[in-house]
Image 1: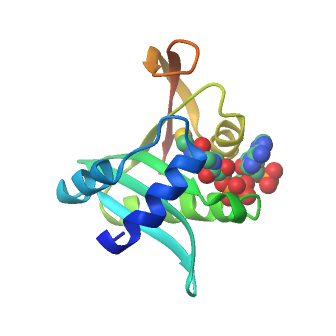
Image 2 (image 1 turned 180 degrees about the vertical axis):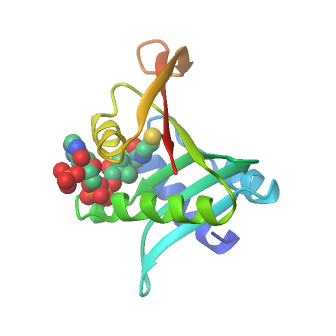
Length: 140
Ligand SMILES: CC(C)(COP(=O)(O)OP(=O)(O)OC[C@H]1O[C@@H](n2cnc3c(N)ncnc32)[C@H](O)[C@@H]1OP(=O)(O)O)[C@@H](O)C(=O)NCCC(=O)NCCS
């Protein structure tokens, strides 16, 4: 991910998330040295993700596939690619958090061997009060 991608990334965020990350959030992540990628096919941008690695742990901070590119296996492929990248960097386990209401993401993560290891009560802002975060982990 580069600065020139941020208009597109931000537009996707607003379309896909009720509480989107801002361009500033992505800039901060890049400045902090987190792995930040745009997935593309030729000139078509398909999705983006940010991943943090600390020692043997990788944390997927955000992953999204553009609305028009969803449902074609790109999310699964992107997450598998992130796992490979994390392994190359020395990670042996990967963590992420997801809203219980996000059934598509939950299904993807469960299908890719993530297991629930915890629940953070009221972690996310929600339209009707706050929403829990399901914390998930898998071996790499
Ligand atoms: C979650 C997301 C990344 C999945 O990407 P995708 O490219 O659409 O997913 P894929 O086509 O690779 O599907 C992989 C699996 O995800 C699950 N899945 C995807 N879309 C689904 C849906 N609408 N309903 C239920 N399960 C779904 C299925 O298990 C699917 O496997 P299958 O095709 O064998 O049934 C995508 O929907 C997205 O970007 N959503 C908005 C942003 C978001 O919520 N990000 C995650 C934040 S934690």
